[in-house]
Length: 96
Image (cartoon, rainbow, N blue to C red; front, top):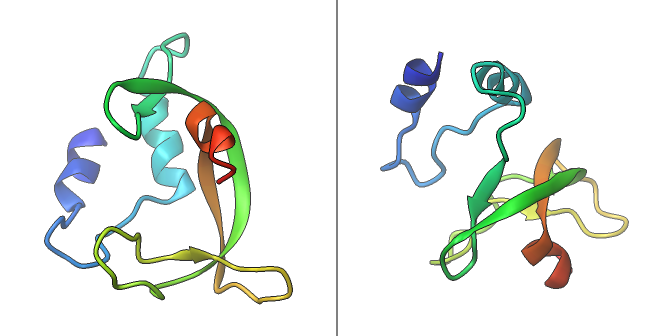
């Protein structure tokens, strides 16, 4: 499963081919359940994932360098889709 998912990512595509929640569940089932879940820190190193957050997103609205293609829908805005984001200590400190 991991080889399939690693192989399907198209890093040359401007918006890539993202994972679904089902893909992530299938991948995580192959790991030791007691292993820490880490992500890259903003300036290097690794930090722990503290939780998950369900958000409404607007898809493919950013094309500026350094910005991800999608954006969190603002108050009163209707998002294109409900998505899941990782919550980290760094993101909480930065209020994102």
